[in-house]
Amino acid sequence: TCRYYLWSALRQDYVSVSQTFTKYTSPYKWNEVDMLISGDAVTSIVEGMRFPRISFVIIPDQFTNEKEESDYSTKFQRLLEYFAKMQPKRESNKIEVQIYTSSSKSPQDSATDKKFVVDLRKRNTEKYEWMELVHDSNCDTRRTFRITIQWLVAVAGKIEQQAQLLQRRCTQYGLKLVSVPHFSCLRSVTMNPFAVPIFIPVRNEDCVNNIEGAMTTEFDFVYDGNHMSDPNEIDCIDGFDFVVNKWSIKKRKKFVPARQYFHRSGTLFARFVRDARGCAIVILYLNQRHNGGDEQLLDTARSVFNNVEEFIVNECERVKC
Image (cartoon, rainbow, N blue to C red):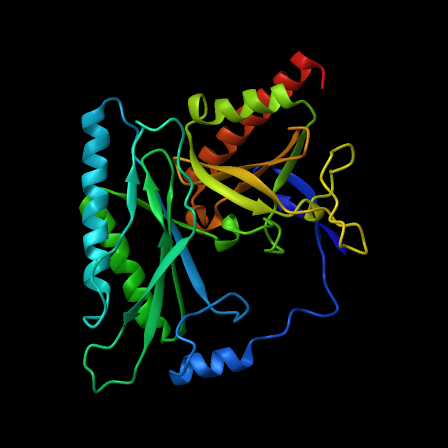
């Protein structure tokens, strides 16, 4: 494990971060990649192929009545119709994505991902180039909707063209599409060695519940789904009750589902990694894909971060945790 300091745009100070390196990585799927590129039995990109990808989320509107929520569902349905047109003609042009509204008790998570192949050729005589468009299996008007473009056989120009076209379509339909780092839905937010997440331990379940509830009611965050997280990648887990994997020789902790929230400005993520007692490590990190060097967006992120951090400190002092 390598430990070093990086400048945090949120804290405006240097923050200690760590990166774990392994001697042996998982075997690369050479045979599968070869069969996929040559058009043999393997017909889909799978994890372990180390492929390039770019990810986006659609941030739902804020609704004050049922009509506004219905209008959002209609706009989203237009996006699904666009997806159907992107599919090859030989495939069924039906995109099945169930749309849930606030009539259900709580936001519905996406059970799995769905994907389809997009042929990037303008004419059949051209060299075969393609990409996959991956998206959530359902849409909830109280949760972000994730879209990923991934490819192995395509030039960068055509991928960029598809990403810009997706952005224009969403703007045309009145949907807010924001670019996000792909690790924001993975087990560790420290996969990028230049990311600087802020870890805040909260050792009281009631306090965690109050903080998590305030994310959507007080701080303008929207639910981003349940993402499996690795507590072993977090330094401040002393005093937390994460379950040990009994098959692990090194007594590593089991992965846990963590609820994540995304600020409606598109600038900041907040993830709640809970242990067996309901206590949590709150992880706050920037969306650098969207912020870039935009000082106005960074100021927004800092303001939200400072307000959230102050709220957490006050809640912890109130319950003396």
